[in-house]
Image 1: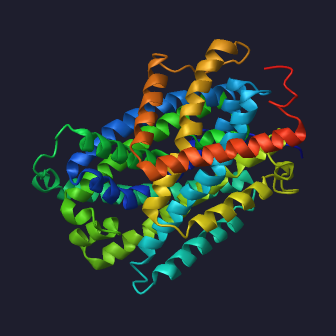
Image 2 (image 1 turned 30 degrees about the horizontal axis):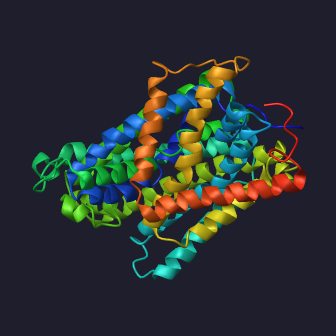
Image 3 (image 1 turned 90 degrees about the vertical axis):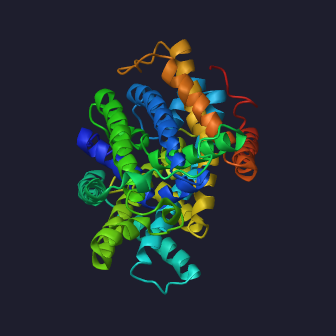
Length: 447
């Protein structure tokens, strides 16, 4: 059989997105968010991050419905900037940054999963933990050697565990929430100075990390049924659903555990449940979080493996990655490449991984695909758009300005990392284009 089959419906698409987005994120990143401004005032970042995610979700929904193919942003950039000139280079650069950001995002799940395994393995050394994180990733690569419809069924099961886990936490938070504990602000908590704006931007980056994945269904666009309707709904439903879940979890935690203690905890979810129900319940929740993390990592590996495949199939990336598995119809070589990068990235710290992946991703993916939308609307009347964002161009402008603000808040070393990986990618592209006599050295007779 040639090509991929459209087997994913709305429920499957939404569960893949949400399993990717929730995963272990809120159970490891909430402490980091609290640290950015040193108190619950840092939760203002939820408002900023949610607005940016919804605005960019509108961009992704319109583009995904218009160009439902494997690769997501890769396809959007190629078509928006022109497949023969700038679009070719930017599509290559997107795949290039996926080789950094994709494995880093997967590694954040691996690292966080091991943090909660320490509830059961308290004597695990730091190096043993890194080896375990890498081994978990290798195991999940092997688990993905199956057909997409089999994976969709498995993802539904993992998604169900995620809902049970988060539901338990949220219900506990509602029943035991202490407003005096949650809103005990430090002095000068809301000072409006440069440091506050910088901390708010950094906190918004952590919040947007928790939203990463609302575009995941676009990477599987060639495998989605009725994509003009399914993709926009899956994108927007998953953003709204995850916002409700994560914000509820965030306030639940600091309504039971004092925020000064919460922001120093590595197993905040287990600590939260232990305060209410005792150590046995804490271990049960930690186990459920581990299963939820498996689902998230599984979804990430599934989606990112489609990006190098799509680029290679179009001749923009290494052609050897364009092959599908001969019997199971999935891009196995691309999966192995992304998996190997994630295994290597699992040896870094969680804070480094999160900031580096945001720095690598923002310039090409979020800023790039927003500009691509403007260009498609202006220059490509041949592209049918089954879904159009509401109040255009306001959401696109909010997304563009918001992500620039977040990027500039990451800190000098991570800004340089983002710019450096981009420039290195440009150099690699130009070297390949020179050798193959592609644009800008030839082969650009059209757009």
